[in-house]
Image 1 (cartoon, rainbow, N blue to C red):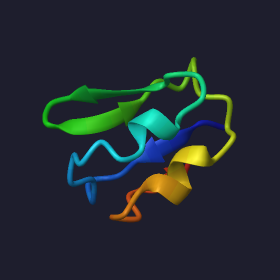
Image 2: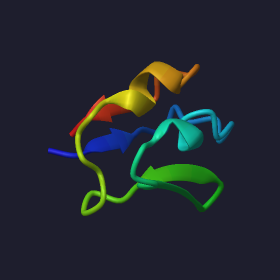
Image 3: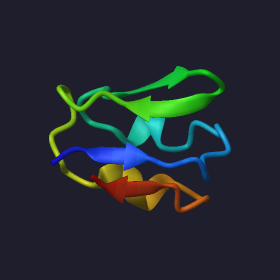
Image 4: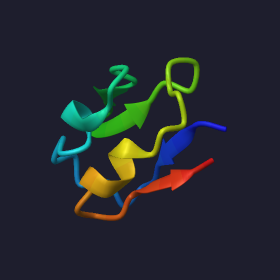
Amino acid sequence: MAYLITDACVNCAACEPGCPVGAISEADNARVIDPDTCIDCGACVAECPANAIIQG
């Protein structure tokens, strides 16, 4: 199951370069994870300073 970015996201983009498959992008002033691209590696979780990424 893909990871999700919650409303706690502060749109700092720290998670985006950590994603090895480029599944993270910006939409509506927050980051989103494309569930079809996400490989469930969890690399983005460690990069998020707001603890806004959870496993969906």
